[in-house]
Image (tube, rainbow, N blue to C red; front, side):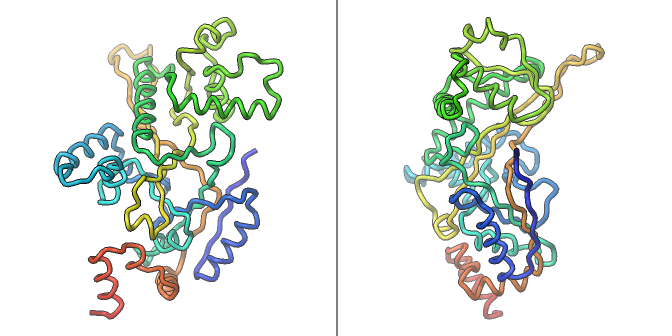
Length: 344
């Protein structure tokens, strides 16, 4: 049973440290959290910049291609190999959600803008060391991220072409990895003693989509005589709602560390999305067109901390060296910090 998310309200650095201590005492795992600080309280938090205006993922890819045409000639190989992170670093909307392992950095981000309004921090479980197909997956290669993106685009396209009835996943390295992890999980549970076909990809899909969501029913492809027939081909499920399929968090640590990432102890969550089409309405003879929706992966979090009294907290953070020149260690931001500090 999923534990209930806990909420806190803090108005000072001391209260924040006390809250972190309580969170640490309650945490079962020794792994630290990923933290995300947002300067406003949003109706739906934890949305990558590329999705905030309801862009489709294909539009974000095109934006990066346009950006690369303009500046690619000036980049070294490492920046080219990490171009999504490079784009995010320079302000282009992407599918990447900035997170940090340093809670004080997240606190700064929750306070740096909109001083008169409350900010918020989200503590996201760091679970990439657990043997569960749905735990976080950690990558440092952007090619791996692009491969997963392609895989999800194929799945979304098939969902659309099937009139919203099915979603398919091909036999890729990523799903082989999930399959291997699932095999470990069922061996530990002894769940495979009477189920010789539990390790088929169809069964993996059943584990991911049925055991962890509602509104899902089996299709004919999952009847016993079809499972063996299809196990080396595809996975498919009928989706009754418009939710993103339950999917692991993809944690991306670029192979190069920009100055900001180093000081911010930063990483990215690559936020999945897919295009889905609603099932055809047979009673509507006027239009034979599906309504396409861009569905973005929801990022779950364990703790929600509302931040008040931002001005005071920024002063307290500055006293321990967490400030603009630390967070953004480039000449322009250091100059801005000195300007504000000395009221120039």
